[in-house]
Image (tube, rainbow, N blue to C red; front, side, top):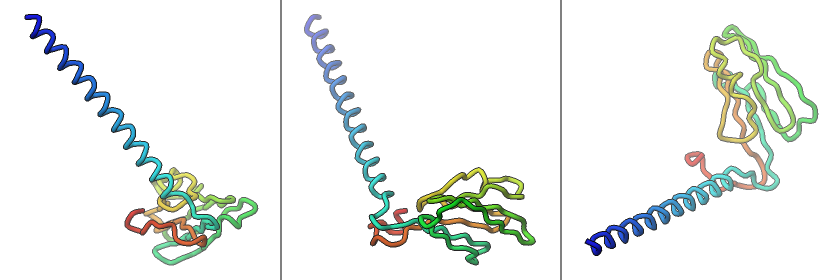
Length: 143
């Protein structure tokens, strides 16, 4: 009986060690993946953010966000509706739209590639890309 109890305790201890090792491995993997994601999103030196505003695929404005000194707004209006876009140094957003769902307004500020703003009812899109400073090593598929 004592041998069986001792064997059960040994299995339990071994199981705890395996659980701890597994938790450490998961945490280490998460940390490495976070570091890689941060490095991938980092701008290469000398790069600057450029926003492209388009409606139905036609480019309306191209704005170098790093060259913006003072905040300003732009109004885009046609038969499909109106959008007001706010531009500040290094970032851009839709602040007003007469579309029913306001997804574009709720998207908030963007300042880096990977998170476009789209107002589907009005066909308006805002995309930020990095220009200059050399390639960042990530292709469009990885973004």
